[in-house]
Length: 104
Image 1: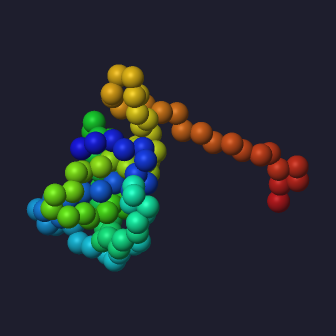
Image 2: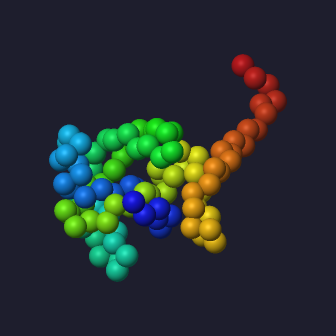
């Protein structure tokens, strides 16, 4: 699987979806790298990287689709891409909280 920070969602080939029992829950319109748009099936799945699991939405591509680990899966799992070393690394989760002046 290729980690692709330019891809919003994780994409798997149709044969992987079939072999794992994933069922499409509908379709979405996606914008391709060349700017064209097309409809593609979407499903709910659990993605696992290095033993850490998270539920994510995945696109179901054609049988020749290169599996892509998209940005939302990377963020959900708390991972970032180190382009120099070509590895995934832990990322920090960010939480900005504004204190309420008069809490209820």
